[in-house]
Amino acid sequence: MWVVLVYLVISTVNAQLEHANTSYPAAIDRVLRLILVTPDMHKVHHSREQIQTDTNHANIFSIWDRIFRTYTPTVDFSKLRYGLDDFDIAKKQKITALLAVPFFH
Image 1: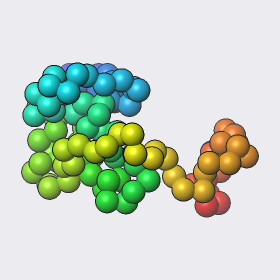
Image 2: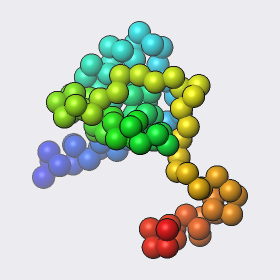
Image 3: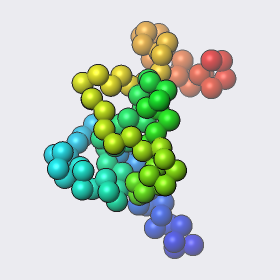
């Protein structure tokens, strides 16, 4: 049971870090992502472009994306568009509309 607890704690902390709107200096990021999933590595997964969305799924250890050939090393973040198409209007950004998406979209 303790192994599951340790994994869940590490996974939760990692998820918070990889979804944070932060980044490391490029040299540090390059070294870290040899082993760990970094925020810049994971950001690609949230792209609107299907080819990018289907990459960088790994949790904690980046090796899984390399093993399964789903690793995208880098993108131009100035051009990266996040989110889902058709959800840019304010009406669809309200909590009630977002909660209804799985049932009515």
